Amino acid sequence: MSNIVADKILIVDDKPANISLLTTILEEKGYHISAANSGEQAIVISNKMKPDLILLDIMMPGIDGYETCRRLKQQVDTKTIPVIFISAKSEIEDVLTGFTVGAVDYINKPFYKEEVCARIKSQLQIQSLNLELISSELKMGQLLTNYQHQSERLQQIVDHVASGIIEIDHSGKILFANIAVEHLFGYKIDELERINFFELLAEPFSSHYQNKLEGDLEDTTVIEIMAKKNSGNEFPIDFSLIKISVGKEVYMAVIQDVTTRKEKEEELRHLSNIDPLTKLVNRRYFEQQFKKEWQRNQRDVDNQNQLAFFMIDIDFFKQFNDTYGHQAGDVCLIKVATSIINNTRRSGDIVARLGGEEFGVIITESSKEDVIKLAEQIRSDIQALKIPHSCSEYGVVTISLGGVFRTSNDDCDSCNTLYNKADQLMYQAKKSGKNQCIVV
Image (cartoon, rainbow, N blue to C red; front, side, top):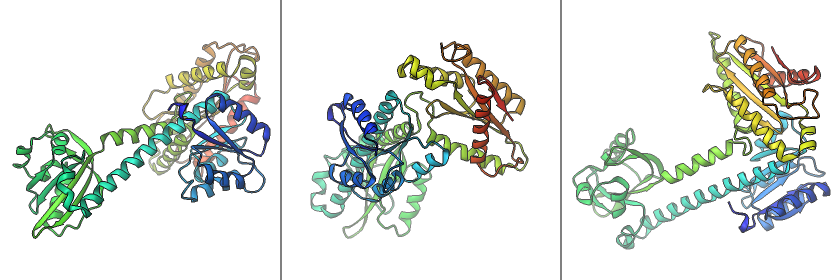
């Protein structure tokens, strides 16, 4: 997304210094900045100016950031505005609460200029895709209204719209098809007259609607199903079947190819799950997958599904940034992330950037011996990168790693417990001299 359109960003923080710093950073990028020093003021300003994105602090007098976000999401005019929390509260419960009330991202204080800009750019891209999808759906809804309530103009419309219009009788025989149907399915009009409409739908939708038509089918709302081209290739469509009163049982199918929309939705999901700097999955996606893996582990009565979790933190990273600058810090984060990924190439392994200089790794179906070897390999490979670090006693960038290995019969009441155990072990590794792994 280009900043030429001057996206509007509302900064909400009770500390003037924080507002001033963020304003300076973002105005340099071409954003239009407004500010509020309380949650109540943020709600009033949001209703008035409709910002494209809100940066929201959590700890504020009056209503806190959580309640502010909750109220914004309850209002029609502000519920779609993306909210990014910027806060020093970084415990897992704080982050989960932020996502629960409707935030789209969470940035820890102290924040880094490049990271804030990257996160904002990513969310504005996502918002733009969302608006495109909403616009597309509104157009489709309006088109269906025209078909249902303006039948006298039907012939004029159907020859010029991009959506496929097919008229069929009770048996599925095609009585009429507009030009768009040729492009959608790859058949010529005369070919369509010789085939049954249900041959254009993929299974199980073809059998489902054929059975419905043989019964007493009412008008269908727009639904996404799979269709089938002349070549046999399947593709997604928005589909609606409308009963027309013309003295006999005639139906009109309205079809729109939504392949492009599905691609945008997939891109949207991808952007929502990826950390823009390291390209690892982000904390939101990690939390979802961690819970799923833990539940799968719990269901394994035969104790075959083994699960391990690593917490990784770059040693002396604040000093690294202070000494070499945040740009060098970003390069360091990318190199460390790449090194971790290179050691975890199996499909079941998940590597996430949890925030700042912290990373999380989920390992499944590995023995404890292999997990311990993997942890040590990650540590040694990062040290072998030889990224200079004058503030470290090792002279190069190193990590501390805490790991927990568990099987389904271990005493662990939730994935949060597992997370916290690994977190504690990581800090134990740091207190014990850093550049080491503790895996239990």
